[in-house]
Length: 110
Image 1 (cartoon, rainbow, N blue to C red):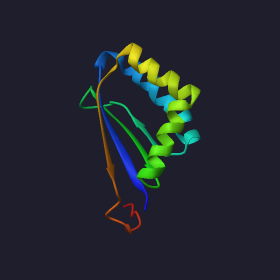
Image 2: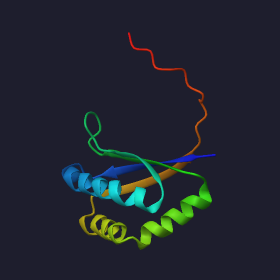
Image 3: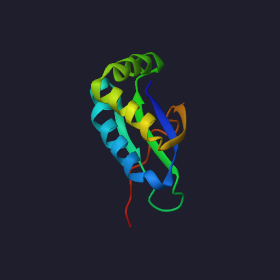
């Protein structure tokens, strides 16, 4: 059973570009370390302070192994340090969810 990790960030609205750089770095490091990255999503319209990261892992044991690899990865270490130094993340909340609506009907366009 695959689970999906949703990370909700509260970011500094004056440092959106720093968050975008952080997100691009994870775009390289996360897949290399073993998670299936859906993507990072930054503010566009509406809230200027809410951003998300979304990725899939096989289970919580796979998540723990992935996190250990990410912490040891050179880009992962550098990205954690970048966020700590620049302080553009004000808050981070993580939740793991499983897909409950499958199977889905095919998309029908008008």
